[in-house]
Image 1: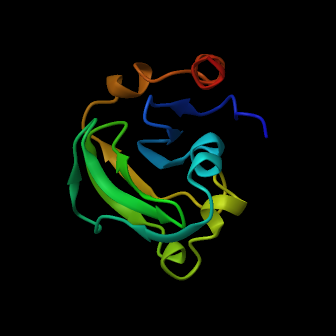
Image 2: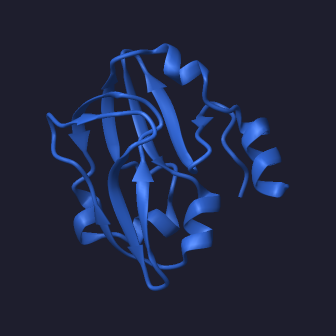
Length: 126
């Protein structure tokens, strides 16, 4: 699977999609493939504040539980409730169906500090 060029990426394998004044966040194809079959996703509540580089939730696979690290800081304005009943979406569709949260960023410059698709691919292939 290719790494979508229109997204930005964190070193912790989260992706960020800018949508007007908000950002949509999920985990990458690489991350889900390393984790294996996802069986549970724990996400924050709408209204919660997240802080860059700090945990905001977790995913549980048949292999392990892994924390999700916020790629940017901001306020959660939407949560993908579909993942509660369908955690397998993370494996099947990490960039479409399995987005996790939508955030109003508190500092948009944090987005520019994230990696491009090319930079992310270099990191994961090293």
